[in-house]
Structure formats: structure tokens, C-alpha cells
Image (cartoon, rainbow, N blue to C red; front, side, top):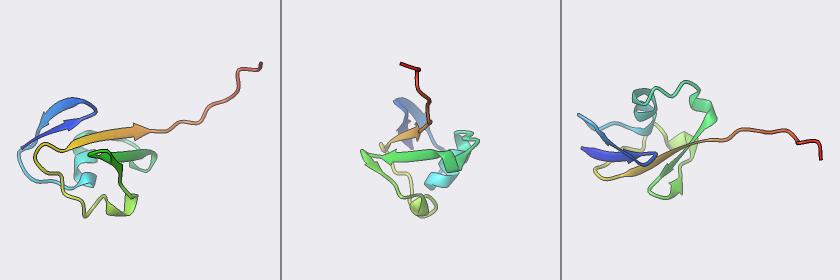
Length: 71
């Protein structure tokens, strides 16, 4: 099956859920990533039950805190 992850086409040999996809993508800190599936942010509780389907568009979003520039 073909999907897009962060704008890149990926081929999957079998059906996977979002949590499995994060492992395949070698995401190190799963608790620090948000997942957007076809334009909608997924609840973390749904990662195990949401299956990836043909032509899905997935964005892995990493939110980082920042400091001030001292203006």
C-alpha cells in the first residue's frame, strides 16, 4: 500500500496502525510527536486502533518549546 508521510511517498508491505507506523518510521520519542491523519490531529489514545489505509496522508509533528531572544 502507498501512503505519504511528511510529504514523502512510502510503501507499506502490510496494514499497520499508527503506533506501528511510528516504530517503522523510527520515531524515538513517541510521547513527543503528534500525528495528523488526512488533515485531522489524532488523539494519542487512538494510535493503536487507527489503521493506516491506502493513500493516507500522515504528518508527524514535533512541538518544541523555545526561549526568548532577549529583546
